[in-house]
Length: 319
Image (tube, rainbow, N blue to C red; front, side, top):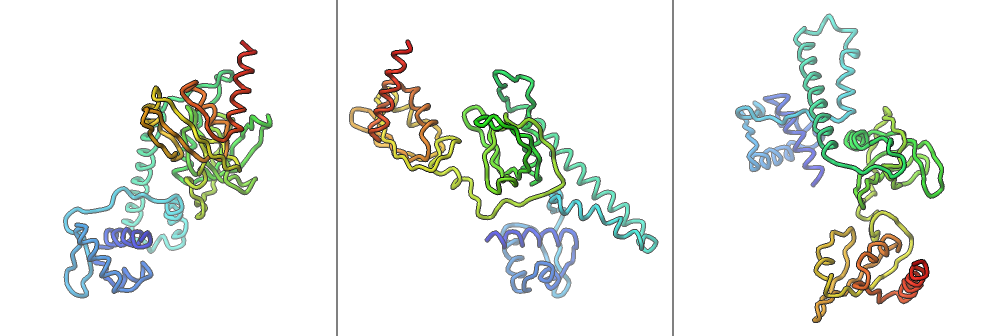
């Protein structure tokens, strides 16, 4: 279905750029059969795209002022089109002057689109209010360049500080997704040095530089699968099934929690709520659970009941 959608969009672009184009040429350009093109044209007409044929063998065009706008070029297409003057330099004297004015208008439109996207991005970033580190308040906000790199599918070079090992490294990464978690932003990216998908906390990026390299997301990568059984952002290798009993005092609040996993919920006749979830790491879940105090009781695993009791004893001794 995705291949057909891509072909349909290309058919629209071809008709827009070459009014009167025939089905045979459309088939050649789209690397398919004329029969398939005729089916595509029927589908587009059914979707109210105003395509008409001027008669057998006379080609296809749009009715009225229908068009696909803006250009929506990929970076590769923009670069390739921008190279045209250099490629045509040896035969400049054979090219009509109107070609160059047309080329200038197309490139001006492309630049205008880029500026519009940049303006929208800057406004969006200004709306998103991020916190500042408790200690290093001069740290830069790299939200805008990261979003741009994701949109343009551009590889970036970052200087990154790994807090757990207290080391700073330079890395080349392909940014895939920007994810908010617990008042912070995390970047899901392919790390060239480690040759695997990694999670980077945005506030730990110390420097960022755009490269001239582009990328495509790995076909087998699925962000939902990547975070399967992950409570928030910390991923582990275990499979821990927690069963928690929430009292009737907080049950209604638990049901409206916006979670990144799908727990099993079972309401009890006394208004309490049985909450069951399987996770690959425990720390973030336990931190979330503790905010509910005595209204959240760990039923399983039993070892976590013991851990909670030991921690409460340490708290009592502390105070």
